[in-house]
Image (cartoon, rainbow, N blue to C red; front, top):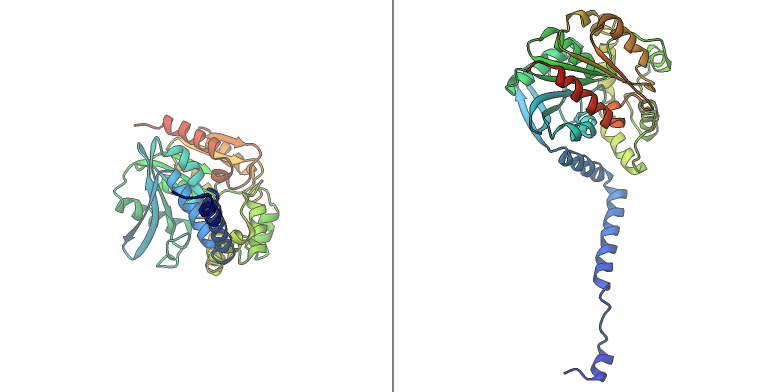
Length: 323
């Protein structure tokens, strides 16, 4: 039995000292990661979003081309295609709302995200359509809903025109491939610029300000880590853009609109500073049966900036498709 003198010599430590020590060590660890390994925080957030969407990462070789993709969810199959300088992660906010009812497949196109560059070096939209078709065929998908954002919309539209038997419905989200009134973004392209090819924090922040009406928050070190990660592909993306804006490629989708038979959603945000919302007038004129939906208060990155409205509009067009 301890005597009062024993307790005086060995005072009991406050109960909160160990939790406080652990909390302090945790905070110190986070601060260290933020300053020295900010890319880990970026990867952790992508992993969190992927988990919330019920998606799993996988890899597949199709001929000489290696693909990295995510897949998950239950229900009718849906293929989601990202845009220029984008990746599968761009679809995660919308995918989280779709995966409870649909089986999603979201690849990194060759030359983007985690997928290596295109083995043949060709990035024209027709070449990307054939590459995507080889991928879905290798996955055993024969009939599915198809959605594409920006460049991915250009690819998806051409895919639906060429392979109508495969596409149950088509969702074109801020899609490239049709003309619109000249804006500052187009003027920069004509002068040889490429806002997509960010190489440092300053150029990334400039691009985010163009792509979003309200850019998502991320600490400066994390944004810098992302800029450093994509900087290695800046030369490639400059070349990709040059291939996409040639006279025979820039408005390739417009020439194929009459050949699209699937129920089609055209979804845009009214503050898109890259591909002007007046692009929708081309679809209105040449696809009179298409559903055209313009969202308010968002920019070019609709699947990230307005995921709830994007998912609702896509579910509605899915429902109109034949079984």
